[in-house]
Image (cartoon, rainbow, N blue to C red; front, side, top):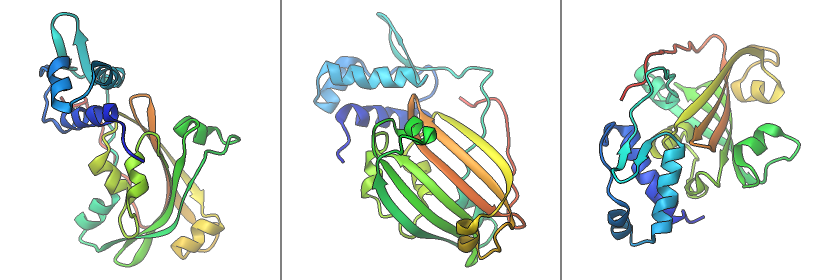
Length: 236
């Protein structure tokens, strides 16, 4: 699925802003400069800038120009962790086994799927994360192909989808739910546990502006994972 040009412009500047390459208050190129740089129409540029504005990443000021938005002082940050990196930092060998991959339309009877992707297709990825060849977490992930069409061409066999998304797809908002649950049969089989064994469930949704990116459920072996969350004022 080819990425529309306005999405490419948006993602280019989104990545520069969220990485800190463009700091708050920095001026973006003018519309005419962007039209020249990307060999496109004003309408395409305007569509990209409108999406960045809706995501709260830029401010467009009449007759003054377009600037990177300054962070709101009340906003708080809970980082989305990179499980692959966390395992490596513990001095363990990391491995991801992809168990199922399919592209399908959202189930109209499942609100969370339609909220994520609307009427667009979903990439479904089920897999297991390992630390030192021992199952650590069972993962069920949905990715909106309308928001991230390039994932359809990525081979996730052996590669953590979460790590790939963090490296390639900036997010602007995340919601995390944490619960203690008993493993159902499918989760228990993937983690080599008995059904009903205690697990830590982390369910996370991420957005880019108004566009849902991914919904993931990770069931961790209860005795093998500690969740440490650091909160603080958003950094500029």
